[in-house]
Length: 187
Image 1: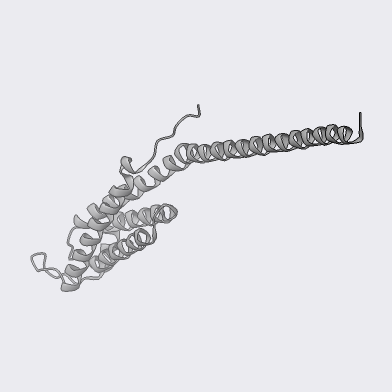
Image 2: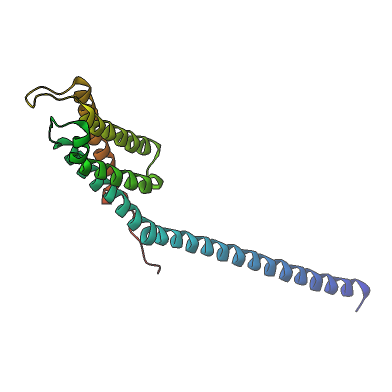
């Protein structure tokens, strides 16, 4: 063999080695990319499963408890009896409303993490409004059962009713099952 043939054979060997290295590196990069994509898909599926299996039941329980406590408080506020008793005696009469307000406040505190900013503000405003109705009921000077409410008490009742209506609409929307994605088992 002459010198140029040896160089050609060496070049062909070198070229085939370079091609083998490039092909191996390409296969390695593609395999790494596919593995990474598969891991990301698995993590996304696990996050969805965690959300559906852990967070959603707690969220639904918390929001439904808030809804029930708001409804109970609203019912008690709309059925508070008028009393000509002194304010100290009326406090005992309205104790169930105070207790319902305390329970609503606890539910509201737990539900804050699941509500957006406007929902948080609405639940807080409703709590303040309900508390105002209770305090106005206790301190309102009613001398005759047939006498109309104090205008401030009328305003407080109206505001509480409007806020309750808004709050129930927001909570019903949050509790609508159609807004939640079901958990899909991994295939």
